[in-house]
Length: 217
Image 1 (spheres, rainbow, N blue to C red):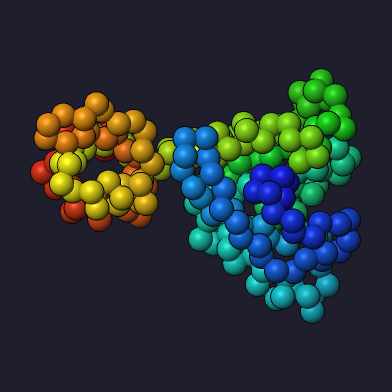
Image 2 (image 1 turned 90 degrees about the horizontal axis):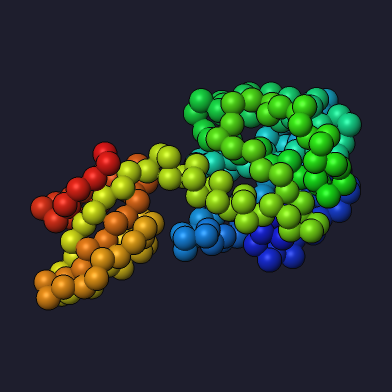
C-alpha cells in the first residue's frame, strides 16, 4: 500500500521482518497539501522477548504521528484478532485513539465481497474507515481524502490578507498551511483562506497579526 500510494519501490514480501527500517516518502493530498508518510515494520503477535526492544524501536515514528493508518488485511479470517494485537502494541507505546487520530484501512477488499464487510466493525474509535486494495488501487483516493479530513479537524481556518509586496508571506503560507482558496487580487494584495495546524498556529498569528479578517478558531 505504501508503494502504491507514493510510487516507492520498497521491498515487500510475505516474510517475517521483510524490512526492519522505517521508510519515509512524501505524499500529496487532493488539495495540494504535502505530508510525510512513514511505513513502519509489520506487527507480530507473541513476539519473542529478545526481539521486543528492536521491534518497538522501529515504531517510534508513531509517537510523533498526526494520523495513524491502521492497515487491516480484511481478507484474513483472523483480521479482528490481528487488529487487537496492533492496538495493544500501540497502547503499550502510549498511543491511543484519544491521543492520535487513527484511520482504519481495510486492505484487500478485492478478495472479498462488499456484503461480507457489513458486519465488520472498527477495532477502536477511529477518524474514518476506508475500503481499499493496494493491488488494484481501489479506495486510495478516498484514503487521501480521509487523511486530509483527519488533519483538517485539528486545524483552524483563517481568512488573511497579503499585500503584493509581501511575497515571502505567500511562500510561508504554502510551506506552513493548506491553501483552501485565494480571492481575486486587488490593488492592495490578495486574500487567502488557509487551514493552519496547531503546531504552526502561534507562528501564524504572530506573522499575520492585524491582517486576519476572520477565522473559525
